Image 1: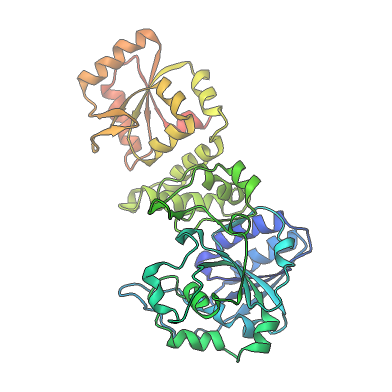
Image 2: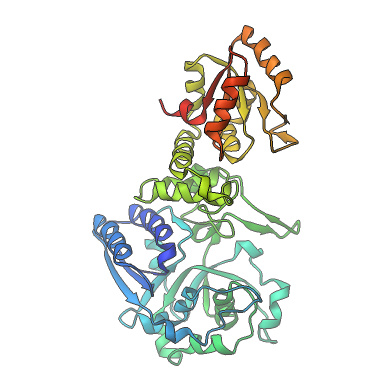
Length: 428
């Protein structure tokens, strides 16, 4: 099977995770990988070569010339720059002249099974094969239709994150650089420029329709019946593994910022097998909670906590750790992202059993239904009273001033209450 990716050095780590899932779930020695890129370092190339050789597959690096794309509409929307790599896709028939067929894959996907059935589909009479776009309710949005031919009658909207190319058909039926030249004249104003271009040029009758639930299941999509945008669907990783061959994390990447539900753990499961796992954890922390004042951070420390919590997710081991220490009451100091992740890891029902209060000097409101309180003598008195009913712990979640906060609590908190950092609880 010929597989193609268009990527830059910045996205190499995420490409590696996708390849881990691809190679692991397909027959060893069955894949020729073609990497279209312009700025890979020697280290990037060696990393891709190494994982490819582990599975007895082959890799070919195709360096694209940036000068070819100087006239491309990189600034389609005011203030927004498109990645040059999306335009590499327009030259695939020319860049891979030795191939008759190739499967192009985005890097924000997980391959959850064999792609042989997809790759061997008969494309006779079709330029491409793609799945209808679940993110747009499978229909071209009304706001996009002014870009399409006026005589258009078929409005299926295809997502091009998974795209099977009939290169032989292209060369026999279209002039050289046909798609590339069309990109210069088509008036398309969207970040998904190349996707819309494929839909405009071929979506009427030259794209073979794939089953989106098997071959391009997007975890974020529009609920067309209710007119709402549904983010973070509720499937867990085992449901995804059972029901969908290709899972596409469109619109909310697993490595991006923000809270992720159980479905995203499938991507992290593959990420954990790569040499970039610790680095990816650090990136997640930076993007989520520590976007400011980074000069004061100990990212190695916070990445360690983050990684530990990811490993414990859903195993029940966190509860075992708490019970082993004979802890009856937990008070969280710090209501940030790490506290949220700790709460979710402990599971909502168990967390409510143990967490008796939440303190934070900078935040107000509620944390998981509990009022966020300012730590003072009056509130510490409550901890002192509860120690007669069981062991109490003030758990300091990672922040910019973790060490300072712990020292302050040791001076002011009741002697009966122990003060632990999340690291001390997790790393035994």
